[in-house]
Each structure stands twice: as structure tokens, then as C-alpha cells.
Length: 377
Ligand SMILES: [Mg+2]
Image (cartoon, rainbow, N blue to C red; front, top):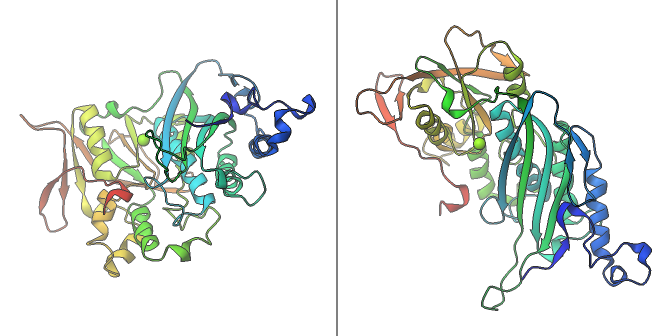
């Protein structure tokens, strides 16, 4: 059974009274209060639509008139989404929030509030500056500040030190983040909105995250010094395209559908094809391939840069579709926008799928092949 350190919305739990209560249990376990204080300090609100943040039974959000709320939730699990011997705590915190922000971007939503629940081994949960948790929060809050999203609540627990049968068990870190966003009523981009003839666009470049992960897996120690968000580290510090999503949503030019590229182009575009009941034609030579993917191919870390761009995953770029006649700029919010193909009606008996056209005129149907990074071996 896990021991709750902080109850809902990160207020002091009933068995951890406030220091004012004198000789209380809090004095026996001051680190719990320190931990709450550390989280509250680091989350100190940069207000947006949050009327009441950490400290009460619930947070209170204040939606604007004419808006709808969008909600996304993501796990970040040690050994599945990150490794403590590969990723710095700052990178884990950044990536944990980036995944949710990317989902908000895909809906064209404005970030409103984040809620973080965590289960941590005791040795990581120190309240002091420099502890694993403090550095995790630093990484997360730096990205949160960039996107003006406050941490408005959450929950913490100690990771279990035994399994359900009472056998000793190595505790690991787990995070669940919930992000709330807001979008003008009826204006959220959906996966199901694509139409035959739409041009398919992607932002930024593809394959960089998988390529950096390949490098990281070879020499994890040389990556531990990268503690700050940097565009040149697409795996450690991905840049969710929130500003692009907002500009597209605010523009009079119509975007029909969107999805973020978290699992890899081949998988995510297939999701969009399925939801819209269409097929997609992709021009291989039009794919914006990240320079790190080219480098991985040159170093023989991957069979080809194209494979990393198609299947790599975790690029957190946006894919969206818009009618041909819609003028889409080449750059939005400083990010390159690339047309890569078009949506087509399903031929008789055809399943929603992707056809990839090679420069030599050869065409292939490609299967969804995005991978889960830590499950490959
Ligand atoms: Mg998504």
C-alpha cells in the first residue's frame, strides 16, 4: 500500500497538520511539509484561467465565455517513458509536460492548467534544492512558464517497496499529468475532420527524437549534462507546437483536422485516416528530415533517416490538413510548415492507409510502425 504524502490538490494531508498545530505529527516528519512547500513555491502561479490553485480540496478554473475545455492525460513511467540512468531529472520533467502540451497544440487549444500526480521512491522525493524531485520540477516549470500554464494541483505517494504478495520490490518513479486547455466553442481541430483533397502539412522536422535516443543509448553519460531545454535536443527537450496550433486556430484559414506526432508519422497519420475514413498519399522526398536522423543513418545507427522520420515517434510535431486553396504560410510562429502529401477518398474495399511515393516512382503502402522506445529490445 502506498503512503499518501499529500492529498488531492497538493494540500497538506489530514495526518500532516500545519506547523502551527504545535507538537504535531508534522514535526515527526517535516520533510513532507517541506516537499509540499517546495512544490508550491516552484508552481507559484503565473495566472491564467486558474482562480484557485494548489492548497484546497479542488482547484477552481475560470473558463472564458464562448470557450470549451479540452482535457488530456499522460503517464510518464520509469523504464517505459524514461530511464533515470539516461535522462536528467530536468529532461524527465520537461518531457512529462511536453507530451500533454503537444496534445493541446493538436486541438488548437490554449493551455489553462496542469495537474500532476506522482509516485516516487523516497530517495528521490527530497524537498531540498538539488534533489531529484526539485530538478524534475525545475525542468517541468521552465517549460510551463514558456507556455504560461500553471501547475494547479496534484497528488503524491511513495512508490511501493513490496509487491502485492509482500515480496521486496525496487520502487520506481511514475507520473501522471492532466492538462486542461481551452478552445473557442466548436473550433477544436479533430482527427476526424479531414476531407479528400486536403493537403497534409507537418511542422518542424521528423526523426530527430528517435535519432537522439539512439545516440543517447550508446553514450548515456555524455547526455546527462544537458539540463536546459534546447531545440537541438529533440528527444531530451522536445518543443510542443502550442504557438503553431494557436495561430492556426486563430487564423481565418481553415484547418480541417490535426494530430500531434507522438507515436510516429506512420502510426499517427493512420489514426487520422481511420478517424476521417480516408487514405493518405505521402511524397517521401517532401518529408522534412531532421539532421540528427541523417547523422544516425550516416553512422549506421539506423537503417535509414527516412525510417526514423516515418516511424521514430516522440517528435511532438503537428500534422494538419487543410484544403488546397487555403494559403498556409511556410513558417508559423517561427516553425517551418511543410506540405508532404494529400488526403484521398478510399478506393472500393480499401482500408484507411498511407501510400508512400518514392522519388524513383516506386510506391508502397506503409503500415503503422511507430515504436515504443524502451520496448525494442
Ligand atoms: Mg496526441
